[in-house]
Every structure is written in C-alpha cells, then in structure tokens.
Amino acid sequence: MSALPQPSADALAQSARLLERIEAEIAAAGGWISFARYMELALYAPGLGYYSGGARKFGPGGDFITAPELTPLFGQALATQVEQVMRASAPAVIEVGAGTGLLAADLLLELERRGCVPDRYGILELSGELRERQFDTLADKAPHLAARVQWLDVLPERFSGAVVANEVLDVMPVHLLVSTAAAGLAERGVAFEADAAGVRRLCWADVPAAGAVREAGLALNLPAPAGGEYVSELNLAGAAWVASWAERLQAGALLLIDYGYPRAEYYLPSRSNGTLLCYYRHHAHGDPFLWPGLNDITAFVDFTAVAEAGFDAGLDVHGYTTQAQFLFNCGVLDCLARRGPQESAGYIRAARAVQRLTAPQEMGELFKVLALARGLKAPLLGFARGDRLHAL
Image (cartoon, rainbow, N blue to C red; front, side, top):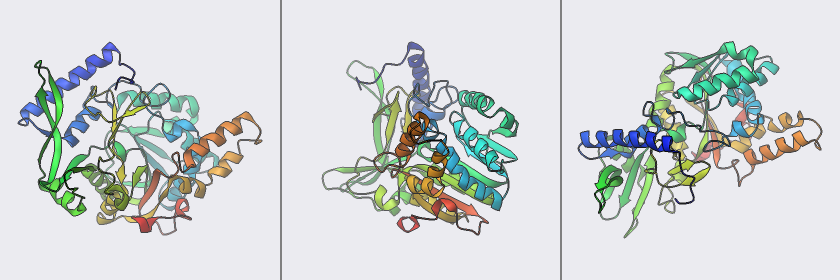
C-alpha cells in the first residue's frame, strides 16, 4: 500500500469518524457484522461514506474513470437503445447513479438530435456532492434541457420508459462466502482486534453461513479446495434491487451496464480469491479496511443472478452481450464518423476512446450489458448481433 497517494489530514479525519461509527455498530451487534453491512457503511453512511461524503470520485482528479468520462460517443450510441425503448413505452428516462452528469447530458443532447427528447429525465442519486456536479454539468452542456431533469430520492411507485444503470450493480454491498473442505460454507464478516500495542483495527472474522446467505451459497455449489479456501461474493442486494424495479416497471426496460461474468465464469475454481477490488486515486488495491470512506469498494457482477432475479419477478430477459458488441450494434462507429475527417485531431482522440470502450483487452469484453424488460415486443437493437443469452 506504500505506493498509494496519502490522503489529506481532513480526509483522514473523516475516515476516522466513520471508523468510530463502524466500531460502535460492530460492538452493538455483538462483535461481528457482515461484510455487506461494512461495505454499506463504507460507501453510503450519511455524510461519511464514500458516495455520501464530499470527496471527488470521477475523472482524472478522482479515483476512477467511467465510460461517459472517456467520450460522449458512449452516450450517443446508448441513445439508440434508449430511443427504441422510449418509443415502445413512454418518453421518460431514469438514470441510476449518474456520476458527474456527463451521461445524462450526452443522452439528452443526442435524443434531442434524433427528435426523441424525453419529457422527463430522472436521476436517482444518493450523493449530495454528485447531485451538485450533475446540476452544474447539465447547466453547462445542455442548459435548454435542464428543466426536464429531476432528482429522485427513492424509486418511483410506477414507471414506464428506459432505466439506465451504468456501473451501479458493482457497488451494491456484497456478502462474502468462504468454502472449505473441512468446515463447509462460512460467511466472512468484519470484527475488531487489538495488536500488540493495544491499537484496535478492523479484521476478518468467519461465522457459519446462515439464513438467506447460506441458502443462496449452497445453491452455488462453490468449490472447496483441499487444504485451502475458496472466497467469493454474493450480491443479494442487487437481486432485491432488480425485484423492486420489477414491481414498478409497467412498460420499458432496465439497461444494466457493468463489469462481470455469467455464473459459470464467475465461480470458476481458479477464481479462488473472489473479485473484490478497491480504488483510490486511480490505484486498484485489495484492502477494503484501508481508510474507510475514502476508497471505492466494488465486486464484479454475477449477471446470471441478476437475470434470474428479473425473470423470477416477472420481467423478460431481452438481451445480454458484451459492451463492445452492444455499442457496435447501437452505431457507435456511425457516431464516430460524425466527428469529421479521419485525419483531424478530434476524430483521432474520439477513435482512441472508442477503442478503449470496445477493445477486448480494455473495456469491450469485461463490461457486459443486460436488458430486462416488460411489454416490449420487438427485439432490442443493442442485441441484434452477438447476443449471449445462452451463456447465462
């Protein structure tokens, strides 16, 4: 961890306050909390968590860069699919976790160019700091459309239209499962321990898996290596979130974009350490206990589980493919061609961004797109070629 940049004194003080809250919750719970609860506090504790505090998260000055930060071509291509969904349901969009607001601006401007601007564009955002950035971005890039945008605190009671969630599922709190040949299935959670000097610090602690975690974990039939352990994640929150949308979606589609695998690839025997990762100032590391509240904590998405949750809740699984194939199907190269002569500096920069979005060794294969829908009859354009539903 020595290679990581050091936080400021104010940031460390905020992290210390969050650590005190976490310690108090662990003590109140009898000395142990699930990792899912720890992750929830680290990311979303009011005023202190990573996404609810004031630290800059996106872009070069933050901790990571998402597709909309790379190029507006991502949103312009995505607009092809959003337009089709809206024309088949209702002229409304809800974006979940809108980051800096760049995707919202890009989508609105491209949908306007296509003559299909939504009547309403809702943004479901937990972070007050990000809401302010989103407002500023929209006021700067699409001021004439900003009045159509409204910020939401909770899921709507009913909704028809397109729901867009780019890199949302990966930051939902996950339970950690541990499978061993000797002890069977356990849940790895969080406790406190004291070192030789009496300094208390967070530590891992395993308990027998129970309840819904045990039931779901046993169904996965995780590997149990002889003489070792197999650790992986279980995203019950993601499945519940999809089911909540299924209760509300009257017509339209959820467009879910994230990094992940189908179940058969997610729980490979060779992936014995799971997929959990942390990000701080564009550095990836594996210690979720380092500076709570200052790091993003993520886990890859089990897209089979997400699709099953949607199907079980009454949604149709309309498509699953790689981000590269989805963007090509949605005409990202046509959007690129509008950038002007191929020898121009703007075109070359845009082409490099498209390569990063679509190249197999970059984001093209790692990121997937899943569509869950209700009331849509026509095949979705983003999955016209290269649909991998069979892999789920």
